[in-house]
Image 1: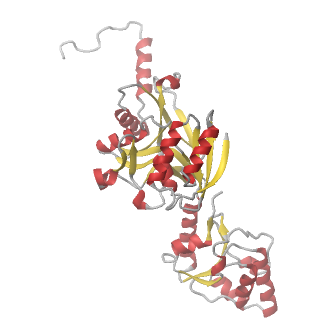
Image 2 (image 1 turned 60 degrees about the horizontal axis):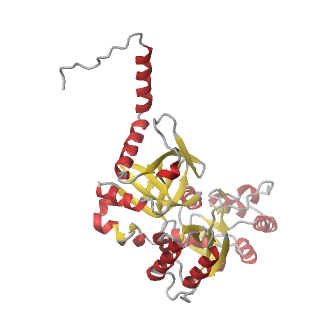
Length: 326
Length: 85
């Protein structure tokens, strides 16, 4: 399971979410979040702790702040202590509100950081959840090459030396857009897969190694139109050496092969490599075929239907075309 | 299969030059060579893969060699990572 530290959350979002540290700067790094859900401690402060989700960020809004002011001091302190004993990775106070001293005292004791945002509670929760959902989404790294061909994200996989990088350069030359080579980071976003480069810096992106030439800069050579940062992955193209393919490739196209990545099924096409084969053109055809299929057009099926109709006719007439044409 | 955690001792980390030496050497072995850092695994025979890991000096990587010549591969490749070569 993915996790991020409160430190990461604070550093990456402090400006956008207008966050400031109230207490516990030294605990930011130790505290980790594993879920994008948040928790409002209203009921817990009212005395009900039958369900308490201690792995979630605790958000204190105006409701909680006003409510605890109505409590007698001993009750209030007792309930805050209970909430803090049950635990949370971090407390965030919304709307720039002041937080009860008991929270701060307990937070210091229990090493729980407290942050404050000037944003209103509901918009803050939406933005925070969206960010956490993005950061905590299931992620996988695969060895391959990702290119946007006619708007279709095609992920090339195959053993080293099957020509994935060379194919990417050829596709870029034909006007398609390069996303990542060698190491592709795949993030599951809802029911789709989004691929990007895994580089630690944006300025290290869009380089390709071509054996015999070295590292080349796709952005500088082919320009801004030739690259993109991320792309939904829609088709996997597997490049295999002819003798290793053992007939495991499609001849008609009625049965579809499927590749499962992070529990999402996407079409898989196996291309056996032979000398002189133009993989780029085949990849373009795969992308266009995929676009047709999205529109409900399946050439293999249509061919088969027409063939069956012809076969069912009692007399097959041998002339289908007007012989005067062509 | 042999697996070892290796500390990068190369001055300036694993930049282009040591990485290319690593890949060239790795390609000479029949064994599969995999390098893992921060839970990201790349092939030791791919230069961009290794560079993408951005292994700074002092960081730890897991080197896995699997095949007939795995022992020789591990010994030789470890030296590059440790900057002894």
